[in-house]
Image 1 (cartoon, rainbow, N blue to C red):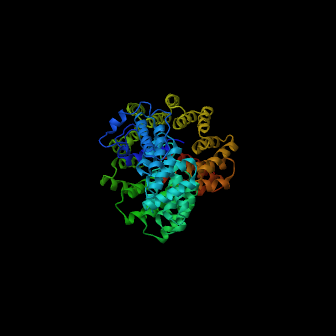
Image 2 (cartoon, helix red, strand yellow):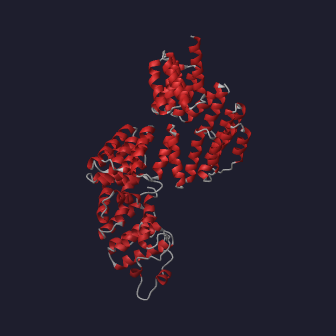
Image 3 (cartoon, helix red, strand yellow):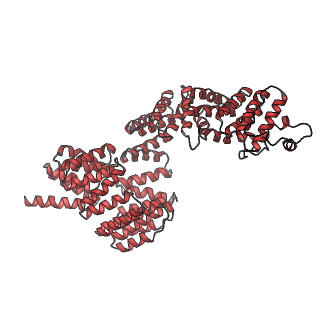
Amino acid sequence: MNRFVTNLLLLSLLSVAGCATDSIGNNSNNLTSSVSQGPGQSAESNNRQQPTGVAAADAKPLTDGSTAALMYNLMVAEIAVKRELPKVAAAHYIVAVGQSHDPQIARRATKIALYSRNYELAERAARLWTELEPERVEPRQVLSAVYIQNGNRAAAREHLMALLELRNLNSSKQYLTLAQFFANKSDQEAVLIVLEEIADARPQDREAQYAAAAMSIRFANYPKALHYAKLTLSLDPGWAQGVLMHAQALALNQRPDEGVELLRTYTRAHPDEKQIHLALARMLLDANQPKEARTEFDRIRQVDPDNGEVLFALGLLNLQLGDLASAETHLLALEKQNFQENRVHFYLGRLAEKQNKPDQAIKWYSTISDKDYRVDATTRIAYLQAGKGDVDGALALLTATNTSRESHKIELAVAATDILIQAKRFEEAVNTATTALEDFHDDIDLLFSRSNAHEQAGNFTAMEADVEAILKIHPDNALALNALGYSLADRGVRLDEAHRLLTKALALEPKNPFILDSMGWAEYRLGNFEAALPLLRAALEIMPDGEVYAHLAELLIATGNAQQAKTLLQKGLAEAPDDIYILKVLNSLNALTESR
């Protein structure tokens, strides 16, 4: 038995006693003073007249039914309380309850038994209290808690159901509030047990099933969440909250497509249900379907044009999808509304970068003062300064940025490493990352950055060692699997190993465009052109990146579709005129055409 029931006492019984913070030795709330004191006799004078050994640890209660025995037990119990002998007090109080049939004494007995952590006596006292006051909430709460901790769920259910009736509880919010009463740091699981018992006892109550599903999600018990979410929806298929819960549970159980379809079906029947459209848009984002998500956010904007969060989401989605004009429209509209200006200014800076306006980007970033965005903004300014040729100035800016947050220190070190890599100062890049790793051992971001520095320097052995160190820490790190798999495939070495690594990465993140591109490239290197084509097309659909354009074009050339490849590359150049990957393949294609 842990401190669960004791904490329960502090939450309920002490408040009933009139002071939630009084110590066990404080007798200002003496429930027995009217019984133990004679006319004109104070409790203090009474206590002074008692022999000093009355409340000794081996004192035994008097069990006969006489008034004298009752008064003796109460007196010894109170003296024991003052002398901080709670077990002695509890033993005497529990006998006094049976002698007096007084619910106030039963309450006092329960309180002291809980404080002394004598849970057997606490159960007995609370049962007596319940018999004396069957409509009282507090003893049933104590009994429910004790039985839950003892694993006697059947007994706990009896008192939980009584609590529901006594308090007239009938909504998920009320059920959740009741369950929180049973929570403490050492046994949070009790909260879920309470809600399971309520849900199982009320199988036709959608609110009970919903509450159990919600708490199951909170405790990451996703199969159980799905079980109760299904029950919720079966009881009321048209309830929006139930639909949302079921969709969320499906997504958490690695079934996001089913969750999306559930929400789509509901929106077709309830086109004006903004809450469902919003959930669908967010779930599409989580499912890495940005275009479909944008469509849903646009629908919401049409009926709620001033919704800042929706405008912000559309701004970011359009930024991600390369629709820079729409992104600018949405973000500038938010800037005029003074909507979360630090966030908006940060992404206006990102937009200016994509528009190849570094000075404008630096201007936006320089307006940011919020601590959560300041370091991010500083690193972006540093990257832009380095891109303009001022590498040392960029590094000095990063070095001068003070922060106490560990994650920010790592971010600054990663940025410095990346800037040095871009400047082809690979040895300095490795040293920068290595120094940071001395303070932040085995940090994955730093290991990734150092591995990149090693790879760019041509030190593939060291690069593989860093990636393998990441995989040793997190064997299912899809990005690390992809990094090593792609490196092997791109170099045309150990292609079977590359394919194996990328197969695992793709199973972990089947819609990640980087992994789709890597696997497509590995299939191309292996000569599996038919397998490579849909992978590279899927990657390009999600992420119109120059390197993906280049990979797909090379595949098209290899399969005799040079004209398709040229058209594709020209489309890529229209989006990114200076992309080195696209230009390299296009130049090779033009040279090949001219030689013929």
